Length: 134
Image 1 (tube, helix red, strand yellow):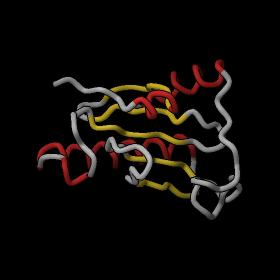
Image 2: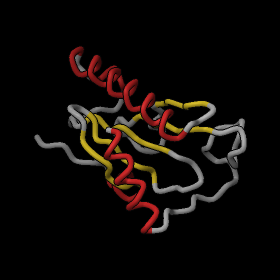
Image 3: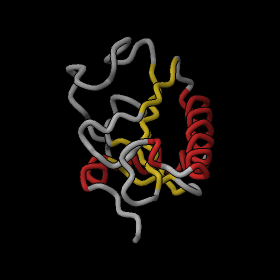
């Protein structure tokens, strides 16, 4: 069985890179610097569905990406969450938060701020920069 990204994740994100276990995606919402990590394994819904080896690797990749993304964005706070209420495929959100962002201090979900897709040139530039740090 080969890895397939859930169609909703594919529609909402831009591919950044693949790590050893996780695919790194940029949420196409320029209101918030927001990455997703998706373990490239089939039939995962919950983080505890990962086998022990993959779980340890996922935790390390989440930690590494969060640290590098925090340094890159100079965020005031990093939000890391695996919710999956809308999309059943296991994915981990890593969101750089700022005291002056549109949702602060509330969650970014349903905050009343419509998602604003990246302009093509900005997205391409950001993807190049992100690839250089991961």
